[in-house]
Every structure is written in structure tokens, then in C-alpha cells.
Length: 150
Image 1 (cartoon, rainbow, N blue to C red):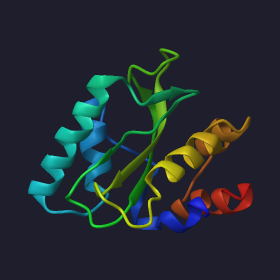
Image 2: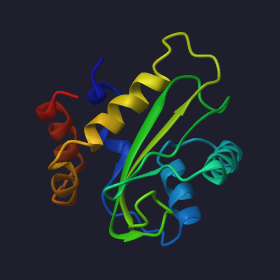
Image 3: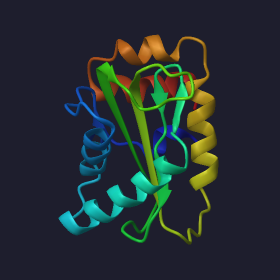
């Protein structure tokens, strides 16, 4: 399994506009191109997950994730906020890079946890935060995943 196969250029935004945790979660959800009701449902579920503990894993990276009936298959989004935002990350530093993962409750392929693990592994690579900060096009993000063999 390679991370690259789960991402598409239209689900990557390198200049997120939100300035709060809620605004960013809504903006990330909007990249899934669902209907308004589904967006609202997903936002509430992600908020509930964040209330259990921040998905900000440190090094400027967060991986908000949940399972929901609003999607029929695993979906992922990448977003970047160059200025960073307080996401209550475990290292108390601003978060710049966001990997959103949403999967249906029952998923035949059972890829939710492996994808979550792969993204966390990718995020721990020594130069990844710096390389993510230098991305100029969504295609550059996809090329980085390919190059890192994730």
C-alpha cells in the first residue's frame, strides 16, 4: 500500500485560509466535495474526536481523522497553513500541515488504520516538515509522497 494512491490533486490545498481550529477543520472537510449536510456531520464528528485529544502530533503536523457514514470509501486530504495555527498539538507549537482522513464505519479494505499509521510514519521523517513548507503545487506534494516511497 502506498499513500500516493489515496491522494488526488483536487484534495490538496497549499494555502488554507482558516485562522482557527474550527475554520481549518471546515476548510479541510470542504476539500472532500461532499454536500452541505455531510460537511456539517463530518465537522461535528471531527470536533468530537479533537475534544478527546488533539490530533496535532507535533513538528507542525496534525492528522484529524474519523469514521463516518458520509463517505463510502476511505478519503484523504492534505492542507497547509504556512502561518500555522494553534491546534493544541502535543508539543504546543503551531500546526502548518494537515492530513485529514475519513473512512466509513465498516470498510471492506480495512485501510483506515494502516493509512493513519503510514501518514504518522511519513510525518516523522527528519526533513518532511521543511519539505512540506517548500511545496509550491499540489503535484509537488504527490511527487514527494512518491519520492519518499510512502
